[in-house]
Length: 250
Image 1 (tube, helix red, strand yellow):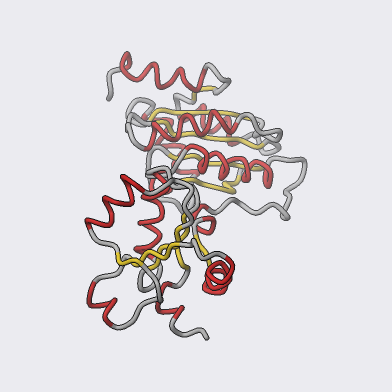
Image 2 (cartoon, rainbow, N blue to C red; image 1 turned 30 degrees about the horizontal axis):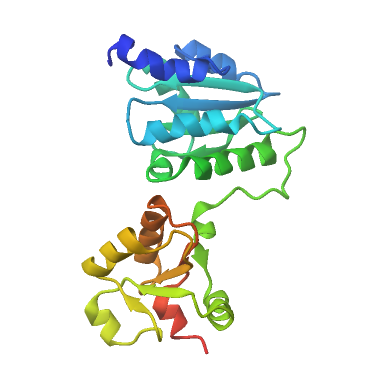
């Protein structure tokens, strides 16, 4: 168990904005018994990276017009009994902390797991939370509301990329593939990324420069896009499907 004195400030970040602490299994069961309500369960954590993002994101999300009726929290590693019982209600999800679960009528309707929190920005996590509130926490479920997808927001299709290139000669294409992949073909005008180019980008490129990153299939370019966003680049996206899809389309 963590030192209660050490974790108290992390608890108070949430309790001072209206979160109620669940400390026992009975507390959790009582919450889940409120079938007519919507409830947010935040599993707090001492983890500096993920929890340090999750707590301010949850707090920022409270500015939304539509909110869960119950705001609750338990601390992993301290409220052991409550966390274990809460995880029994997190059907279909592996244990992780921090995490955020949204319930409606006693059923889990949305979950943000630790792996979805790590490496994100507060504004991104806040958008995910508020979109979930807007969909599930109104008088009725609003199926017209899409849960914000940070991956989709970082991607651009092949057709959209071609349109951007034809409209704007200042678009920068950044190829993050290996040399042997590049030898088999590349998009005309693309800059091949290496350590030297990487340093030039971080140290010298303007943060509003439009950049489209691509790899072979789209996974590595997503990672590179996320990294560049963390470095302050505002207009960077990953080519969905990568060069493999680009080379298949006319």
